[in-house]
Image 1 (cartoon, rainbow, N blue to C red):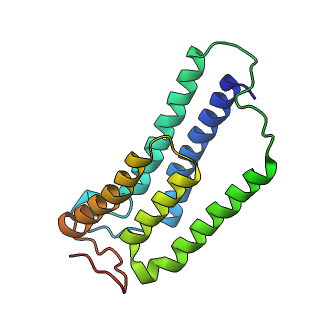
Image 2 (cartoon, helix red, strand yellow):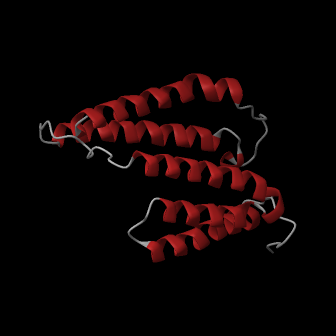
Length: 163
């Protein structure tokens, strides 16, 4: 598969998923009380935001496809080491399972930090220092916003509790 074909498939898929979410999944499966005072705290706000951003991303991919040169070079080199690819798949499944098991013990923030860092090193990031900083700062910033600004309770663990 070349880059233009990949852009087309990803763009159409993202637009289709966005429309599916907006017109069927969110209205049918997300319930919201009618008396929510702040629109940002409504259970419908973030799903619709994500659906809209997914649609914009899909449109961006389709627009970018037009700008790419028409070549038939493959997008990725063929994988010579299939066992290592399977090992990475098993490790990411273990990270997900670990997240599920650690969530009640460590809490959402600490588990997110560990999973973010583990995934960054699994995919061999070219920026390990930035990955570690982001693994620490992003979950703490999200916790600070939701717990102290929005007033939403974030699950805390049994080991370490955040203020």
